[in-house]
Length: 638
Ligand SMILES: [Zn+2]
Image (cartoon, rainbow, N blue to C red; front, side, top):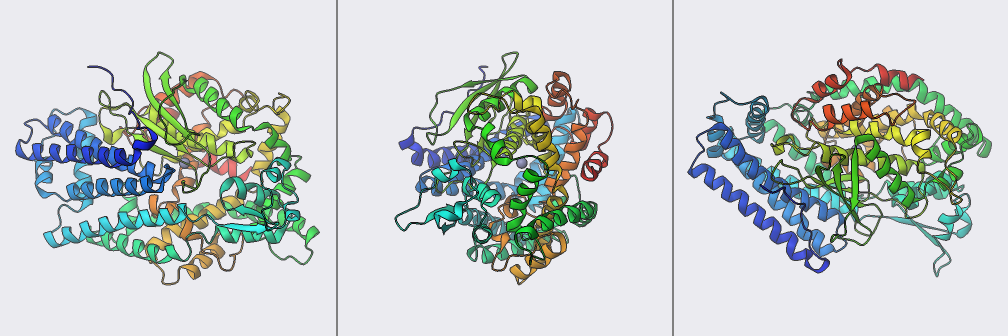
């Protein structure tokens, strides 16, 4: 058997046809596999699982590629076709999950003689059928199918409205005071004498951090927090109502219970408890740091009684510059995009024993780069694509997308980083984001060599998935790591003492940051539980309960909160994973983050295992003990 090759992507003018026809072919193959299974049920359990694995791979590729190209392709027509392809894939997946004849075949299989992984797989397949609603009566199954298909369409509408909903404000050139010169140069005034500032990250992050004009900062934040408003309000109400109905039809009390059942956290109620535990632990440091912001703010505006969200980032930066001797404008001169990208590849190569070879293959946009990834022993690990700059109609945040899920002997894993970084100088927060997202990509590739697609790559419980990424962020805060690639225009590396001060400065605000995160987590959880009639009013209440920054009149954060679709009620995932990430990081030697032994052990015991074991067990194998809250609590209290 020859090794599987990466997917050949089409040339630019062939995309439209390819997106549709490759999905049709794949779904036809899946349907063919199902028909064959039903006509001649395999005589052994392993053969039945293999047939299912093949069907699953076809479905999963179709949905993944549809989702990817609906978010990244420059041509709106291709994006539409990709949405349709993804929808068709998800519709077939729903249909199969409700197929009683298919279920009967798997329910009748004996686990006798299966190895541990195949036993685990059979358990998951049966569990997924049950969670799909296959055991319900015919009218209920029909309603479930209707709900799931509708939810897919609503999810696409929600995402499209955000993706195409970039907003902007216009300011007078003098309102750019405080911004870095390279940013100002890149934003000339238009014919009306005004400068357009968009809500896309490369505009918005520097503007909110550096622009002296408080009113303009506020206008830009209000613009960002009204993306998708009001269009997505009705979409969200329908999504929450349908998820709730679906959960009840499947025998659960509510959507968060249904969703949490297959995660580390296990129940909806535990989400609420976890949110409050973190919020409580963060309250004191949060109040202390907001007090510091307010004191400094009053030097500029003596009448101020509270810190607005649009002031937080700006005054945190002022505080870090004036009191902690970290000047973000100086810091960014060390983070030229090209050097950072090269440095990231070099660092992860040393850490995980990987090599990256640039490949000249067709890509969907000229700015996208592709690399083949190998182990140091020369084994093909797969292919990655980096799509790192913003453009119109493209996904607005930062995420890893799957192009292909790896299946040993069948297909190599391929992943895509989709981000929105500037092409010139980056903020250090961008560098951290890049390391974070790359953590997902490494997980997808290193873990993507399982025989069963169910366990391939980032296939652990969904509230663990952020842990490997959050841990990799630590490397973007290390003097030796940054010193290896971050050099300014004169070629001087970023000084170690500056990085040390940056780390200290980063500790500032972690309490109020955690409270803001818990506001988002509470939104995701509560909105799914309650589907409140007045979305804006409930958002405001939860913001007052958790965040230390007041609600901004006229805004509606949930309508652009993309995670409400992907993570549904589980945004707590980020903080849950961070608790585990802090614990896993405690196994590394903080003075030598390049030490290969721990990194390789982590790669092999956690990343390479994909979903073959429960996340808690993988972490326990790596740490030699169960994970706990201690490292996180110590970090928060520091
Ligand atoms: Zn992530």
